[in-house]
Length: 146
Image (cartoon, rainbow, N blue to C red; front, side, top):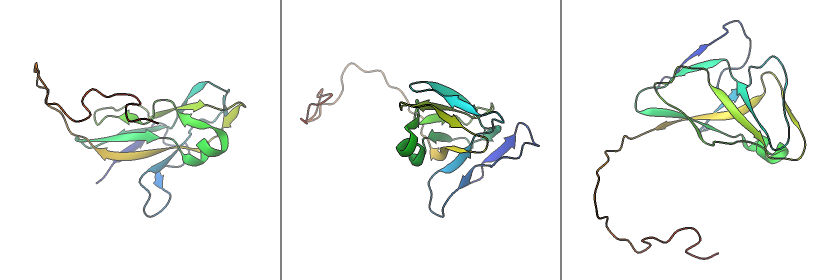
């Protein structure tokens, strides 16, 4: 499958999305901000990537956190996974959140997220007055115990 990617600023020299290893599920996505972006504790910043993607119909790009940033610096993605729909043609921006207690600075070309391409199915909605029962039925949060 091919994913077409366009740079908004073609002369900006930063990394394109890339699979870090042979069997990686996600492509690393990097910050394209020339200016450092400080993320204060318990705040979220929108990080530009300088990228516009063309996802094939029937697929989406999911934006997920990088495990190293999460483990070492408590940096995550507030709406994880973020979704890029097949018909979106705006800049991919990453909502990084500092869940930690100290400020974190995002630098130019720093790998900040992963992009995973996933197949999606369209559901056909059918309105009904009855649904089938299951063993679980209406058991919700914590119903199976601790």
